[in-house]
Length: 600
Ligand SMILES: Nc1ncnc2c1ncn2[C@@H]1O[C@H](COP(=O)(O)OP(=O)(O)OP(=O)(O)O)[C@@H](O)[C@H]1O
Ligand SMILES: [Mg+2]
Image 1 (tube, rainbow, N blue to C red):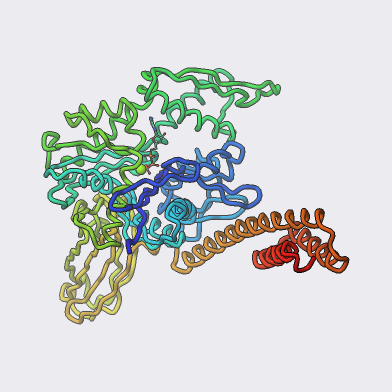
Image 2: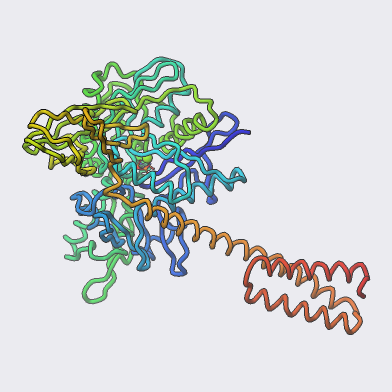
């Protein structure tokens, strides 16, 4: 039997799910009919989770309990300067978790970011299960190529909390290349330019006879549509402050309205020369008089506000070409991915930079999920006829003497990979060695991200320089890193899978997965109970009609009236599905006996 596996593009702004059905990848529309689902989660006053369109629709009126753009924060430390700058602009509360990590607060309850992503993943899984009418647990989830180890691990944790079996984590541009490459048999070198809601990625790949070889990948996990929106918001806030001397940034509801208006304006400016922003009653002045925003922004004005952001993407493209050892002229095709590539200025800049028009017929919103689904289908049905050779996005290594960063696995190394270096002890009778695992691109150890620290103890005593210790970095196909230290003579070794130290513990993940499953079960029970009550109501209606139209002998009428009363009481306070179904069956039974005349 065909196994189904999900391809999930877990985006900053929008997420998308795909499966391969009868050999063809398809995007599955959600219950509202859209092919993408907003990556937004809210908790309603009733305590019910709202996900996707439902959450987006109530974002203005429930701003502090509506969480979005968490992909920008996932796997990061709360003290990260980028996180700190982000916190200032978000209407929901962010607090520090127990591992220097980030927790968001909705209705006084703290959630880890993998839990938020798990809710979105769960929603997409439900969309696919509703379509197929059967449960699916296997999935490939995509991440920005430039995600570091902690961000990847946090995404896997999100899958686990959602009850998914995460087959692989693959890079978004690589997934896009798979979707593109399976349509063509030509041998070619392509550039995938992915400018989404929160992140920018560029990958250079060679595709040849089903082998996808990533030559280089780079990007910026803090550059995307949100930044373009923020430029419009800043412009409007500034104009407003100039006119009324009021800072709208202090008002979460006004900021939420500005955010929605800014995004709408940006999208309109991809089609039109100017866009009107009309926000009546945005706030009131000191005397209580309502104030409004009513202004227009031209395409040119918007382009001036964001030109530096577009230029930043091109600089990063230059680095990607250099790292891949190719020039613009070696690129056969450019694949545009991500909603922001609909902006004319972006398309124009990319075409000018690569000296060619980007590929047509590619849906920038769907191509990543489709590539993930193709890869996932290949894994579960053993039918894969393409080979994926992805790379590490950042240098990996350890801190050495003098506070320097010693690279052991350089960026753009094809994964899975194993690299080792041998160090010797630096003083006599040294019995332990502190190993600080780093990821980044800076020479100074402290300027890179610390993935883990551990002490390798039990080193055999000896003179300085006489004991060889081998440090090995293994990076698996998901880009997850394992570091092993080994005394080469005694073979004594110690290893860590590095990111666990800054992320959730296995116990926490287990508890969160259980909380999630319990919530979904209670929701399902509520839905099942509601449906059972509806059936009971129908049966009660029939019984009532039957009683009204038939003269029943007194004892039978008493019995039936009694049954009717009990049924109506149960409708008012249904306890559980079994009891309600039982009552419905008793009533149906009585109806058929009366109809057959057996008890009349
Ligand atoms: N017509 C358009 N013109 C300009 N921008 C657009 C248009 N349509 C969508 N966008 C922008 O694209 C962004 C969303 O793109 P996309 O759905 O590809 O991102 P994502 O996958 O959620 O994010 P990421 O890949 O960074 O995690 C949003 O900022 C959205 O405003
Ligand atoms: Mg995306």
